[in-house]
Length: 276
Image 1 (cartoon, one colour):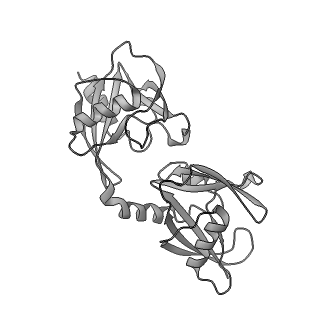
Image 2 (cartoon, rainbow, N blue to C red; image 1 turned 180 degrees about the horizontal axis):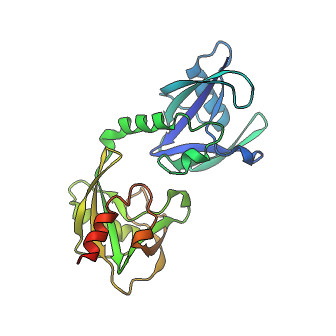
Image 3 (spheres, rainbow, N blue to C red; image 1 turned 180 degrees about the vertical axis):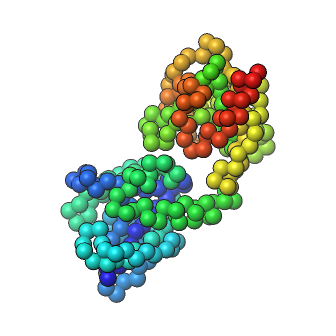
């Protein structure tokens, strides 16, 4: 039986993925490799990560093991061991690493991106549910409540995309509530920082418990009729998103295509907005 390790590395709520420019047909992957004779699975995970990415990390969490009928590349039974490590915030956004004649290109993807699992090739998504559960359990105490804004103009709602990270999906203005700040104050600040619009009079729509651990306060605000249909905005404010370029635009209420659970209170928005 072959013994292999799969290594998941996160930076915040992002997962490290790699591609091989010489073999694009393989798709996205994570660091992986075989357990060598005399080596434990944990030792193999740390070694493979360093060899394939250049990262030397400690504090691995064991996510589980799976027996498979045969190897993806060889016709032999196998056992996969999965480990999770966390990279520091200063880890680069992207880099290229070469090992044993192979070229690996690294970048980060949001851990909850809908396209993450389908994009991972060679069964690399096997342990994603365990990884996501472990991540939530570890960071449960760190999840500050957030304020989210549905900004309407007529029968449309304001959304945005990150120009340099389209995989982040379609979003609405949203962010953490700072200490000493009310949800109403937070939502006005987030709208200004993320879109450049200075609005007022937010109306509470309700709350949503995202992924069972983070409370989101949703508000409805109205944009002036002469607000442009589409514009680019450089985010201001805290260090998390500051400097990012957002493409803001108004989309139909019933076809705005929001990701990341941001559509949670759209039915309530539609009901109250059209009932006014």
